Length: 73
Ligand code: SF4
Image 1 (cartoon, rainbow, N blue to C red):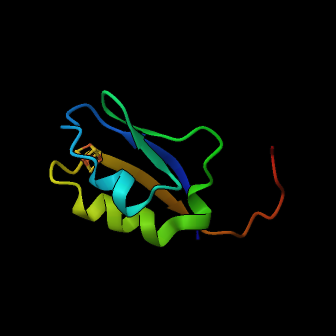
Image 2: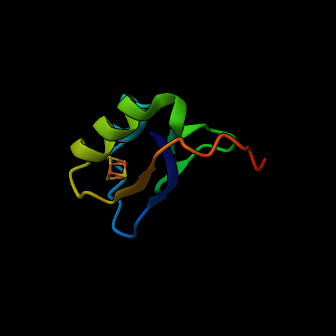
């Protein structure tokens, strides 16, 4: 599965947990944001862990099967 559309919904309380759990993906300044150039599919377990542990559950993402190997980048 690959991870797509990682978003931080409004309501982040800037606790820093996601950046602690998945420093490769998140940085927390005023609120949490996905790091530029971060590849969520590479760290999906950490992403899931961060999303599950976020106290206000604002980390959203979609999981898609990797049946399409064509890269669009
Ligand atoms: S874990 Fe959730 S509330 Fe905490 S900084 Fe990350 S997105 Fe914001």
